[in-house]
Amino acid sequence: MAEPVTYEAGARETLAPGEVRVVPLGIDAHGLPREALVLLDAGGALRVWVNLCQHIPIPLDSGSREFWDGERRHLICLTHGATYRPRDGVCTAGPCEGERLQAVPHEVRDGVILLFEPPDPED
Image 1 (cartoon, one colour):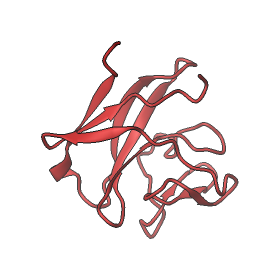
Image 2 (cartoon, rainbow, N blue to C red):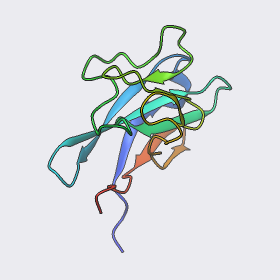
Image 3 (tube, helix red, strand yellow):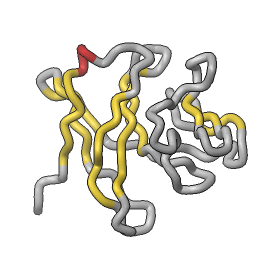
Image 4 (cartoon, rainbow, N blue to C red):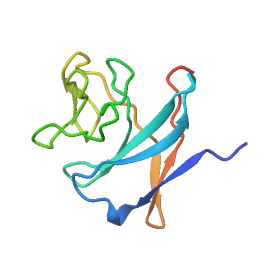
């Protein structure tokens, strides 16, 4: 069995509250680049989500690298305003209310955040 594809997302101790670290995840089934959003939720827990809105499959930030709402409490899709809770990825307002961002499997090993290739939703 092949080793799972892993991506390093930097040191856990250097991830600051409010920071969103963007990590490339390779290419999806359509040949498009995928990214992970690595962040800490309000309780300080590490969360990792695929940077893809659940309403229309486009990056939340539309390339701007701006991910937070005005209060910096929710992740927001800049295209149409869907807002997502960082702790569980659930959309709390917008056209995809109740849907959830895709989680990226991850672990911290020797202080380094490791991400594992998430399944492609098209598979």
